[in-house]
Length: 116
Image 1: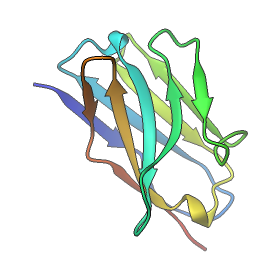
Image 2 (image 1 turned 90 degrees about the vertical axis):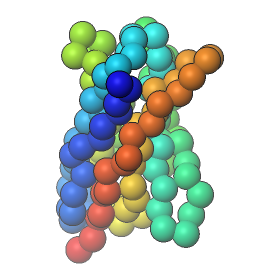
Image 3 (image 1 turned 30 degrees about the vertical axis):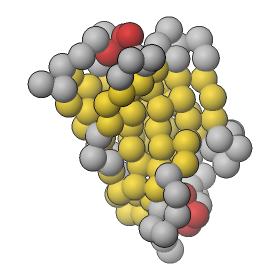
Image 4 (image 1 turned 30 degrees about the horizontal axis):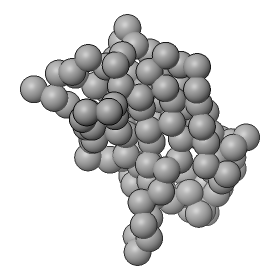
């Protein structure tokens, strides 16, 4: 059974940090690139960051550059999104996607709320 499960969201104050995790099972994790998306209420889903299956290519949205770091552990079948210096506009549900040329899997998301 394929599963992608995000965790680590929560309520934080502006300037604080959160580390999101993505646990995958039921498919060959190392054959998939990982992408983190987010969607705020009333807004379209947007790409936050991505990492290739071989770790060598990482891309970030402009708003994430310098503050967020994407990583993965193929042995553990885990992906991570470290978020620092959070802003209120980072409030959204964050989703983990595993994608390759033939299929993609996504989780249910984890809520991140940044508020003073």
